[in-house]
Amino acid sequence: MFTKINFDFNEINKYFLTIIIFILSLLVLTSLLSLTGIDFVISFKLSILTLMNTVNSSMYGINEFDFKNLHYFTKYCLIFFMIVGRIELLTILLLFKKFLFKN
Image (cartoon, rainbow, N blue to C red; front, side, top):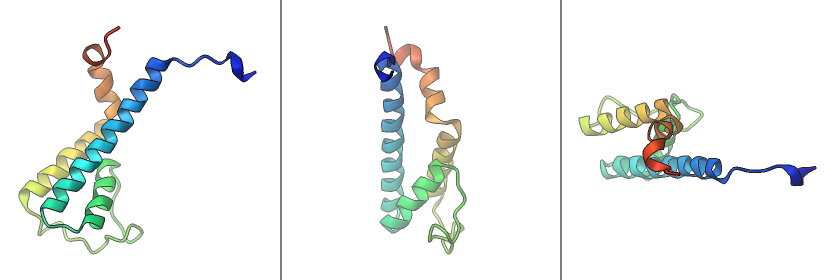
C-alpha cells in the first residue's frame, strides 16, 4: 500500500530549503540581539517569538523584557524579521522560484 506512493524530490528540496532559511534567519537574529548586549537565552527566545509573530508573555519567561530601552538598530532588526516571519519564507521562495529552481 505504501510502496505505490511517489514523492517528488523537488518539492522536498523546496521545503528543506525553507527550513534552512528559517534556521539561518533565527541564527542571524539571535546573533544580532546578542551583539547588542541582550542575554543569549533571552535573545534566542525573542528571536523565535519574532519570527513566529508571537507575543511575549510570562509563559516564555521574558515578560519583564523592556522594549522601550532598546537601541533603534535592535528595534529595526526586530521589525524586519517580524515582517519576514509574517510574509512567510515559502512565499518568498515561490516568488523567486524561477531564479532558484531552474529545471
